[in-house]
Image (cartoon, rainbow, N blue to C red; front, side, top):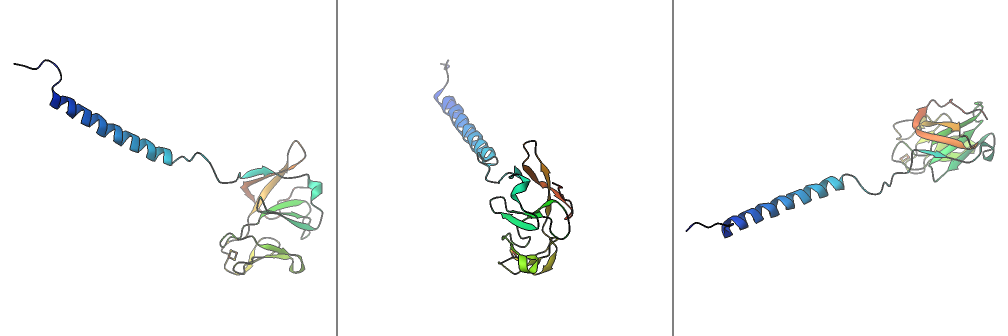
Length: 156
Ligand code: FES
């Protein structure tokens, strides 16, 4: 006599395939989701700072939370300029040493002149300078994606 419905063997065969394929699909979905994290830990590359008047002439000011220096009217270049405070060797924060008119990295001894050029130590590249503009609210706007020459300044 011929069986009319689903045989027991066929039922378990289909159930096995469904289980196997759903397991593979959920693993693949998990792997794809892993590639796109829910939280981005990288700080924004473009940001606002305070009003230009907050940075006196003939000064170099560290903004530690943004890891930049604001250079105002140093080395005979008028206007505000922004330079990275991330050493190009291994990422420490160089210190501005006013007496020597240069940045000195405490980690491995790299030294950068007022233009950001490496003058000593293991740093492979100069400190990059970033474009700075004034926003509509009068605050400084820095875009660290936009690297400029060291003498590119914002006249205020
Ligand atoms: S991190 Fe600055 S010299 Fe190594």
